[in-house]
Length: 152
Image (cartoon, rainbow, N blue to C red):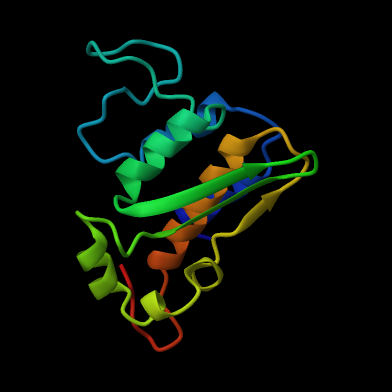
């Protein structure tokens, strides 16, 4: 099991926000980070790690920094929290590079192809649904595909 798969399993098993998992997620944020990798303490003048598992805004920021040019959707209902992330092939900054990287995938249904469609039950933790979708995307793009190519 890779580190990303282990982290995904940690997130899938959460019933609510978790500061230890927040710190692990914070390590995915490219340097320089605007926060430190501690859950509670200010260090080197930087605030503690963001609350990725408890804040949809923090989860969205993580997505924007870890997968630039990707889009997301989050939905909440009485039964579940749903989320997916996919490349935005029309992004004015990253779209052309994403189209080049995922040429075949750009012609398919990206939500189905990338396998990032999350249905998290019970409802009440939309940030966790978005984090799960983000991790599924990272696992997908870092894994070899059927034809032996690696998309990362």
